[in-house]
Image (cartoon, rainbow over all chains, first blue to last red; front, side):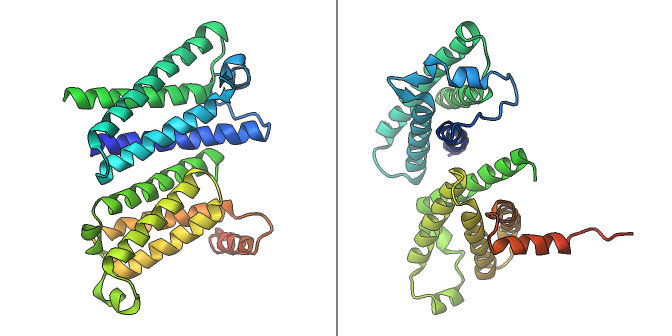
Length: 136
Length: 135
């Protein structure tokens, strides 16, 4: 149960972070950028949307889905194998997307966004937990 | 309170409430053991119904805190919920930690009261009580 608890905790942190970014975007305010200082450049770039959907909304949906699947697996309802696979695929896809977004910040935008990096590390940590749990 | 400290407290408390709600759904019968028999005499619900209601309540409170929506209300209900748990279950080896959650919810409530509300008066009073004595 510990890996699922960790996944749920990380997904919850991700939810709070993306909700913060969505609120700031809707109210047209700049988010606090404690490290890097390039949050505004990154968050208003052309890469901040995927097929017209803002990345923060996609992130929020992904985190909510991860938290929901993790909680269903803990409670023990529904097809556990399917949920397990769905969780693995979703986190893997999010990890790849995070690699791409981090590369864009590093090489293309040449600016670092604290919240984007935090989200990337959250997702990568989830992937490490899943991979570690599979090998042990 | 610093904004960052407030957010850390808010998210941490939210995760605690959400996770407790999920754990109750996982093993409702086990959690029913925490309900004292005298409670069943005054509440017209079965142990299972009390426990499931508590789980749903915990998840709603956790979600509100996590989404940074109506934090003062969620924190107030959370504090009242923790006081109820301490009264219903008593202070033992497990529930002693609920004092920390109670303190966290009270801190969040005091920090997130909407300006101009009646509740702001409470904050002023609490500040007055804990004001260090002037030499």
